[in-house]
Length: 503
Image 1 (cartoon, one colour):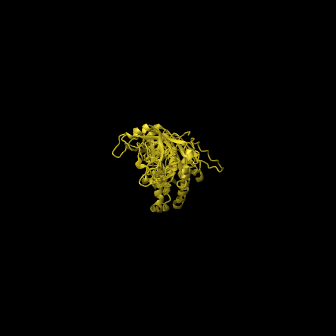
Image 2 (cartoon, rainbow, N blue to C red; image 1 turned 90 degrees about the vertical axis):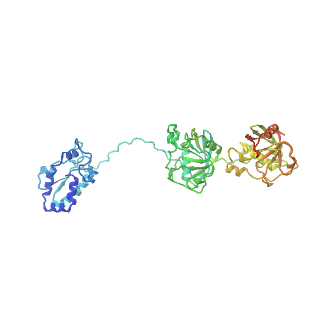
């Protein structure tokens, strides 16, 4: 009889009634056990031809370890009571003892018989009787586990510490400097800063690029060029979302997520190359680029496959934290007219150099602005955007920069100027401020006269004069243009150098 038979005997009311009226039923059950099929015996003893599961049709029996129960009346012989009976070798000792107490109690109630259960634990397939020791026994030592590398905990930073730190990413295309939003996303900022501190990002890449959209990096798998097919899948599911009202404007640094899972952020991040308003409130913005957006733009413009994976390896060679440097003073902000007379500006163009002397006595604030913008590099990588033959050539519009100004640069350096008209004339080579209809609308754009222009006198602020490179100005004036006065060929103002001269 297997466990199914015993269960049916105990659970059936009819069976219980018959057993109560005929105590010899237990003995008959014992005798019937001798009729077990060879398959059952092979199964219980683990012999050849044994089935993988109990041959019984009982569903639970097919899922549980199987063992044989035999009932022996009290009047049976010593040999019968002491006979060894086989059980399934998978039987756990503790489970067998618990079942012994359960079934013995039930059999005592229904038939006065004694349930004998022998727990087979020996490997040779036969029941063994083991005396139980009453002595305390030390637990057997657990088998040694294979050694696994345990990552040390990441450094922790307070919000105040994070406010005073920058992360510098030295890439194969230039340096990118980040600052943090620890008040908006404290967990994300701490996690990123901790990874930077431990050198986690060294050797990773910007693996995904979208032209004028975003660049994405920070996947630890990207350290291995042989795992390129897995780039973008590593380092995730570490952080819960910390959404905020911080907009995803140009330069914003935000956490990469798995599709549909807001709590799947980790080491990967992306940088917005342009405003991405559709991402607001759906991704955790935790920082911003304060230096190196020109590098971000270059990375964004690299060729990518149809899957947006960069075809060129852009490596983060080194990432480190540093204190935020003190703000650089605005150049020439307190310079006197006498001090400003000691400087001239050299405009380096694709057609040659142009040297300009300034007139701080007649237009001190306009000269200060011109020297400031030149020293800060805001004229760098702009173009000469207007050419009117025999009249003027015009440049200095920061909106034509190859790399747009950051919001911080614009706020720090750009302002409208009050007019500073004087008796200075608009002669050939004169440098004057361009403006709109409003007299106080001049800001960064300037023009150089190709010939005397008396109609402009007293209406525009003259602040300098070309002292070298007038032939370069003439070349510009002869350039072919479109109907809107824009040169057909690009004429770059590569940079503006402030040069100190002795008077």
